[in-house]
Length: 144
Image (cartoon, rainbow, N blue to C red; front, side, top):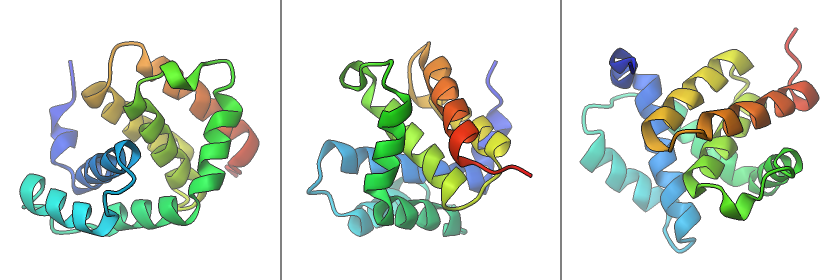
């Protein structure tokens, strides 16, 4: 059973907003991030007042896109990324963005993104995302 109370959390909604914007961008690079953000915010998240987290995720992803993509590819080598659900790749990239550049604690970020995966992806995707995230944490995240 899904935890529906999290869906009303501003932080969850910010992540969800970022996911929608970045997934649109991943499917069509001609989509302008700023315009898409505004459209998604106004039409799908009109009650979301605090968008700082969504803005941080988008800004840090765009600024570090090449490195983030390299990290995901590094640990997903045992999986054929071309066969993976495209939204799973976006979720992984957002997860890496938040852990490495926003410094969200790994356990919190992984938990939040697994919830997004449950809501937006297919069965089995959580295992893939959790495995790759664990590898990223081992190599790149300093949790003291």
